[in-house]
Image (cartoon, rainbow, N blue to C red; front, side, top):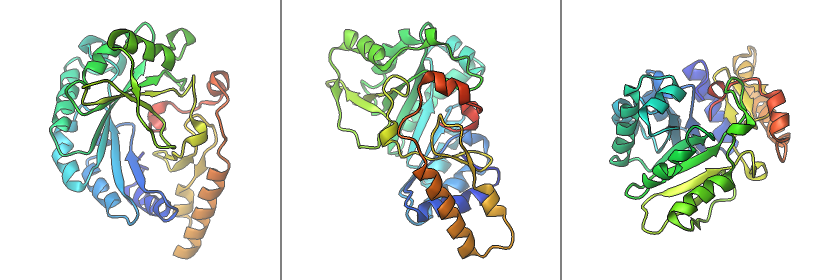
Length: 294
């Protein structure tokens, strides 16, 4: 996520790069609301050691911003889309029905562009959009995109209820009942998605099984919130302020760098092997997903 000032965010990115971080993703809220987003992408790409810069967006204004983002060096884009039905899209996203067409156009524009990777993130909720799973899979027939189905996760303000939960196994069964067996791809050891392909389909299908089959032991993601707080686990309640270190007066650059590296290192070393399950997560989530960054 982009912290509250652009200079602070770029400074923090340099510290992470010095510690070995090679990939940065801009998330939200909605990163395309920042009028300087293309400039930020370019600045991040110029940091030594940063190999790729990606973005997660709702896609509504992506078509308009895409040329500038590509010129700045954006490598990959994730588009969040929970329904292919305009009315359902409007209900879940709280956006006008007409915004759905803009998102679909953005997907097509991205496919036809030079961007390296396009992923659609689809949160599956029983009784709402599980009947669209196969329609989403069909998008991968002729398009080199990855549709990733996410299990519904409990966050502050998202009205999580166990009857709405549809597990990875159930999602996968719906697809195989229609299309036949999925073939598992070889994923990198830190992947949060289990990825599959269908014969003769250009794209792929992924499952992010955060609840039913967590991948905490291999997850190497770090999240920086808009207010400069470091989270080493999406579901953890612990946060460490890095913004305060950036703004602390009376430090030399070397002293600030040493403190930053020590604080980040301690937070990473304290990362737990696994989250405590749905019941534990529900009791400690204090931020909605929109304030964390996905």
